[in-house]
Length: 280
DNA sequence: CGTACACCCTGGCCGC
DNA sequence: TGCGGCCAGGGTGTAC
Image (cartoon, rainbow, N blue to C red; front, side, top):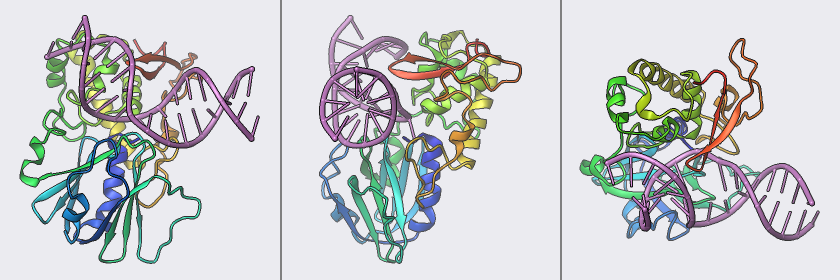
């Protein structure tokens, strides 16, 4: 489900609920999600305070006051819901895949739900979190000033694979997923099958600017809700209404003076949506 | 090292 | 109403 903007939306929603608060009890209803939970997971978190919520790529990081950091990945279908002390579970909500519940001393609960169980949670020493196996090879964040067209040019120089699949590689840019790669390539007028190494520095400058822009706009919109993505308050994002190409096969291109229809191809087993007229 | 592909898992939707 | 096939926001392991 979630790409960078959705994870950032979750982080922003959970921060006021969890930062500075202490965990009373952790309920873990399965022994594993994608991977086994770390040893004594619930026991290690009971009584621990959460200092700070941050995000790296598509990872949510909860810095704890015991010297450890809880790293959480939402996979394709993970979501967190915060329930205040006096709030009750929405009646229509499906609870079958509520796998982890954080019960806080102040009475709030934070529930992790993940039908497909591609998500996972792990614990690492806070001072080594950047070197943990999940984060150590990540490329630059797309927003902020770490991503430059010249660095990207170098990273792509020996890549003959299509730009679409290369941009999904988290070692190249961290946090992009299928939706925002499709959208950024459309805005930059770059065809998804273009060979990565063939793109000029000028094209990459345009691409980098559009990646930054689309990610920022999606964060402002609270992410994209395709089927059921909601933020920590249970609300839907609305960036899906702004898609130019994603999931719009056979619908008209949104560019002025373009009469083409959006097409879909499969690359690396994933759908790519693009305008055959605007993207070269 | 780069690339292609199967696979992990559940659920929604579509055609029959 | 049921069933098979296909699709889905991600990442990893393997073979070449």
